[in-house]
Image (cartoon, rainbow, N blue to C red; front, top):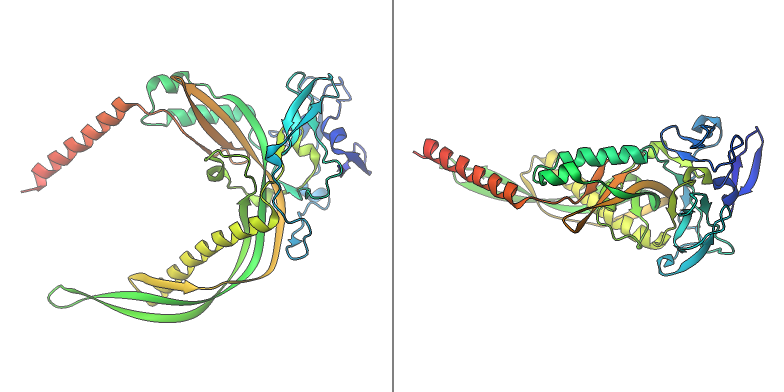
Length: 367
């Protein structure tokens, strides 16, 4: 797979993905990698740094693609196959999942990005949200997160270390669309009579709700079953950059396994839930109703566009008393989600305190 990249000089050249992500440092010959802290290509040994193009340095806008004219639409089950990877630096051979497009050699650390040779059924990403959280920062966030867990055992807070932090670019579809939704809504209005009794009347209204949907995001992977990834998948797309393989040097990157059409069906379900809440809230507020009794609507979509992007996640786990707990850190915002051990003693004490407070309040105000 070839990409247009900015070379050391002012000219734009074409290079293979592997050549870009396994680029050698001109100072010491080591492999340079993407550094989230400085947003540049950096040599970890001698300190050589190459700044990546900033959005204002060229055409960095990520193109919105027309949904109807897209040719590559199907879901691809890349997660079921393995393929061999040979490190060009040390010659080691390892197996990697076919859905992974970037890999580091586990023996010498050389960065390798596997090209999708001869596969015309795979869409290349159009944009990338770069890592801004380093591995060290992610570890610090984990420690702070553990300290804030009220019911976690003290031993877990002081001794647990997150292991196997892996930085991975995960695949996402984003969809834009103009929506038009004719609806019928039944609202409830409560009234009190002079005796204090409540009576409810109902009124039905019809309307049309128009809304432009911007960047409805769908996680495009069936491979990862980690339940915390979706919770952590909230990104600032104003920082989206045009895809360049340099951004994924030193990280894993996964290809989508949810195709364009399947992703759009998921997006429409998400959009419908959003529209339902917005229509109900709008009518209830405008009519000064007490609640929505019933709402039916249908939605038409026009001018649908999409983007295929990669976004950053740190994944790690830690072990406490022979049980493994998973955590996920958003590689852009630092938001962390995961599971933590719970102390039964702390929970019992908390319940006892709540019961005691309730009894005291009942004795004071019960009479």
